[in-house]
Image 1 (cartoon, helix red, strand yellow):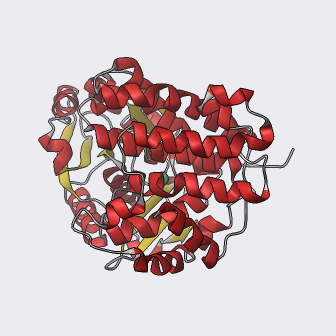
Image 2: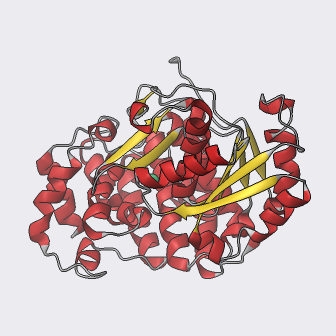
Length: 404
Ligand SMILES: [Fe+2]
């Protein structure tokens, strides 16, 4: 067995309605001696809650704020996070944290508020400049005590050591450090009850891709824990996604999706994703579609490409997501997985062809854009090296053509 490392959140709290007890949990775990902030207790604790206006408008914060204030924690809200947060947003949140002399940070929302909160906890404590910590392992601690509370079931950001910031018109930079893993990941499936069905569907497919790519990743740190978590994630996500899309308040399905997305996050945080994500990023950037949908559009086609040279690819992971594939010979299971995923994506109501998003949503692109997408995909070298099969620009173009 190869050596490996596995990092995740210090503590995970899971349960329907648990965000209504966030004050008590924050007091215990972010303000006590266990947080490493011995001087901080409820009496002088000051919490900055980092979120976005969508979360506020959906009233998801109300029980949490009541709970924090009932626990005696002075709490301020920064609700200025936007999707793909630019540096200015991160710096504004850091400024608010410094001005209030925050002793703890809570990120509450989808991937963007959680990523912003990770950076606020670090920068408000150390005074480091954001520009100095981009890259792998550049961040230096300590950071403020940090809790992350997801309101979608997809990104897994609550258990990943990564924060992504938009630095130019389209340029993104990432901070990667175990310091960004929170003290507490608090998962309350009830926070996802009001998500529109297309968001549930797209974020759910994103989580599936995290698990599938983590399981098959060529990354040297691909490890038995990640593969175990990936298979359990796929079992939960596959079992829950149809019910969660059809009936947003389905308690069991929402629990399955939220836990499945987190397990997939733990898997890929330690065994990184590959060509599906590499080819999805240019789709998102060009057509302004959500990350999960970008993944769904290229997913079956990347899997088919990978199966061309290795008939046994995905044989171990496919039956976790679709138990009926256990009866398919291992040599044909990968292709059967791609077909079953294409069917599932259609069944849960997502667009299935690139041309569907290229010609809608304010876009009027034709297939002449595909070579540009292929060129951009090749820039994702950090992800492409993890793909089970080497992939050239011509291969990327072929996959986009198939997806068109
Ligand atoms: Fe993703």
